[in-house]
Length: 244
Image (cartoon, rainbow, N blue to C red; front, side):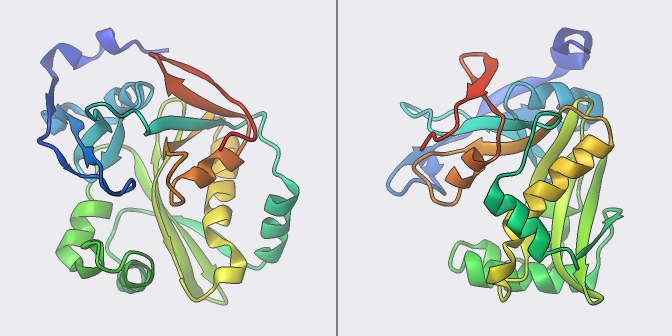
């Protein structure tokens, strides 16, 4: 395993942002620790940063570093040991007619239209529902690491897209958006299950799911995929089933 000290970490710098309103816990202030210069963060460097709880958004690499709050917990699924629950198997069965294909990070008008519909339905008023094509490209199509779009179609129509980073030891699920008019499909669950499957097919150990926040309905769902590890106190440890 490549060690962080063997990478150009001595040339990386880490700075704290000013406080800003937390996106997940109302009434709280958040801060992020940001990596710079971003030009040094290639796949190998980001793989090691991901093991330290960092995430990527476009060319921006960060992890939460909030004053008096540690609610954001990095989590990853252990791919080889993962077994879907009964409800997850039902989700797979419901979506047996969905076709998955991997695409490069190239602008696709159908993807952008789906993204816009998803943002307006799920995140109205949060700012992302106003994203134009250039903001979309910056957020989802800008990457210095090994990235791809997993496209999901139903009868030839795009119903979900997942941005995935291929790291040295796993896949990182960066962002997923899907058709908000198909709630019975459970597309969010399908996206996670499919990414776990892709990681396994690639011989990778983990699916990095980002931050689990027990008190946030938008983020608490990640505790439903086991075995799950959480990065706490400087190392990865098992997150027990049934945590809430």
